[in-house]
Length: 201
Image 1 (cartoon, rainbow, N blue to C red):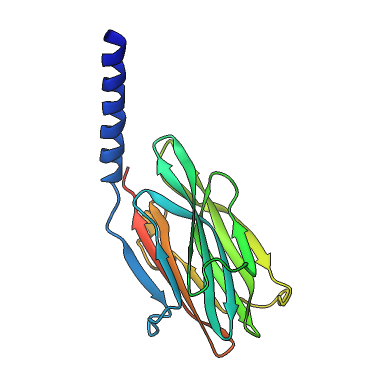
Image 2 (image 1 turned 135 degrees about the vertical axis):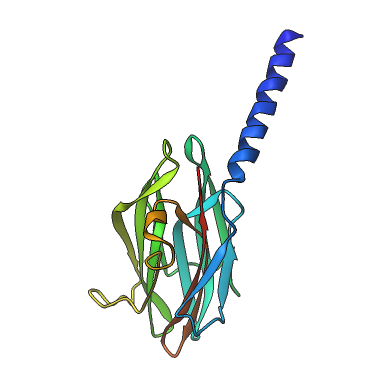
């Protein structure tokens, strides 16, 4: 009986910890880049505690038809679990590009390029998550890139979503990408949208 009671207490503690941890997130904020364009062909947002760690895309006939978001859950012990979410008018079609951050890192910027109805170039900026501080080490990062068969090697990315100027400088370690969207138009990336949340440990 004592053993059974101890298990119940432990489970209750875990549930309480998870609930209080979830309460430390700010409300989501969506930002369009550039600000004048708001229509999106693909768009998705993650549940609370989950953050983007990888992405993939496909375009056809001048539209972004497929988006993949790979995500992990932020927990007191670090990034845990895996989630893959697909969206768009053809969510399960093969991707033209897909890039994922190294284990223990999260996406802090997304840059894209389109040409001849293909998403040709994708670059993610990946910054390390520190479980002890529950913050992102924004300034220690690496770029991860993916290219399609139509890629423009060395070409400038047409559009990029990053945290620069979106939050106060002192909040860079607290900001996480929790949603994304995009639109293709006239043989180029027209706009992207990112949803961010701040985590206050």
